[in-house]
Image (tube, rainbow over all chains, first blue to last red; front, side, top):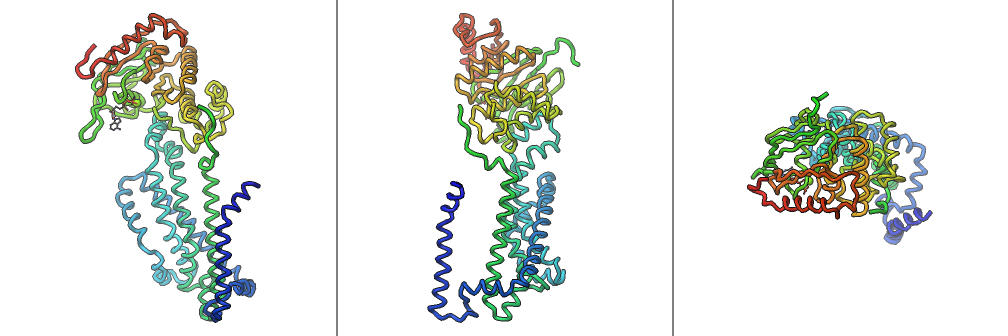
Length: 260
Length: 261
Ligand SMILES: Nc1ncnc2c1ncn2[C@@H]1O[C@H](COP(=O)(O)OP(=O)(O)OP(=O)(O)O)[C@@H](O)[C@H]1O
Ligand SMILES: [Mg+2]
C-alpha cells in the first residue's frame, strides 16, 4: 500500500503536467477557433476512437504481429551474431566494426526499397523491424559477452570448467543485462518501424489507417491513431522491462545485510 | 597415484615477468614445497608476487620459467587440480548464497543435492545461516569473504590455495575463522598453501612459513614452526612464538635485491 502510494506520488507531477497540456490544448483550440481538420479538440479523439472501434482491432493486431515477430527475430539473430563475435576472433574483426558503424545508418529510409523487393505483405514490415532491433541487440549482447569479468572466468576455469561451462556459468549471465538493454531499444522502435513500413503500402495495420485518414482529412483519426501507437509502444516497452526484471532478480534485491 | 614421499605441492625455480612496456618482473626465483597434509604459509610485502605464485599453481598462469606441480602433476596450463580462493571474492552476482557456495563442487562434478547438503551443515560455522537465499549484493564484505572460503572448502580437491582469505574480516571474526580453519584442516588432512600479510596468522596456523622478498619475489627464508597443536590465540605470547616472530620480522626486513639466506 505504501509502495503504491509512493509510486503515485512519484508520477503525480508528470501526470498533472500532461493533464495541464491537454487542458491548454482544449482551451486554445476553442479560443482561437482553429478548424478541426487542422487541430481537433482533445475530446474528439475519443469520439473518433468509438467511431472506428469496429475496424481498429484488426489494424492493431496486424501492426502488433509485425512488431512482435520482428523483435523476436531480431533477438534471435542479434544473439547469434553476438555469440559469433564473442567466440570467433575472425568474426569479431570482420563484423564488430561494421556493426558499430551500421548503427548510424537510418534503417527506416530503406522502407521504400523493401516494399519494392518484398511487396506489400507482412514480409517488408517484419524485415524493417528486424533491421531496427538487430543492431542494438547484437552490439549490446556482444559487449556484454566480451566484457565479462576476466577474473570470474579464471576462477571458474580454475575449478576445471570447460568452455561450455564457462559460457553457461559466467559469460551468458554477464551478458543478460546488456542483452535486455539492447532489446529495450529495439522494443521502443519496433511499433513505429512497423507503422512507417505500412505507409509504403499495406492491406491492414495502423499505418494504413493513418494514410486512409489523411486522404479523408480526418485529422482527429490521425491524432487518435498516434495516441494508440504511443500507448502500444509504451506497453511493449513495459513488457520488456518486466521481463528483464524477472530474468535478473539479483539486480533488484534489497539493501545489504547487517554485519561486519 | 603418486610416488610415496612426493610432496603434495612443489614449485621449482619459478620465475615470471608480466609482458608490457617495460615488462614487470614479478617473480625472480621461487622454490617451495608442501608435504602432504601440511599447512604452509607464504608471507611477504605487498606486490612481491604471492598471488602470482598461486595463479601458477591454480593452472591459470603460464610462468616465464620454472615448474609447478601438485601431487606430481604439472599445473602449468592445467587448471582444475586445486581448490583456489582468489584474493577478490569473485562471487557470481546472479547466484544466490547457496549457488555460490556449491559452485566449485558442482563444476567438479559433485551432485547438486549432495553439495547443498554439505553446505547447509557449514553455514552456521561461517556465519551465513539464514542467508542461504540471499544474493551476494546483500552481504557485507566479511560475509562475502566467508562465502568465498566456504566455496573453496566444498570443492573436492586435496590441495587448497588460499589468497588472503581473512583480509576483509575484523580481528574478532578473523580469530574465529583461523580457529575454525586449524580445526577443519586438522581433521580432514588436506594440504593448504595460505598467502597472508599477517605474521601472527602465519605462525599460528602453519607448519612451515616461507618469507618472500619485495618484488621481484624470491624466497628469503623458510621457517619451520614446531609449536604443538592445537594452538590458541594466547600462544602468541609464548617464548618460542615470540622468537619465531622475531625471525620472521627480521627476514621481512632483509633488503630485497641480493639478499640470500
Ligand atoms: N596481470 C598483470 N599484469 C602486469 N603486472 C602484474 C599483473 N598482475 C600482477 N602484476 C604485477 O606483479 C607484481 C606481483 O603481483 P602479485 O599480485 O602477485 O603481488 P602480491 O604479492 O599478491 O601482492 P598483494 O599482497 O598486494 O596482493 C606486482 O608488482 C604487480 O604490479
Ligand atoms: Mg595478492
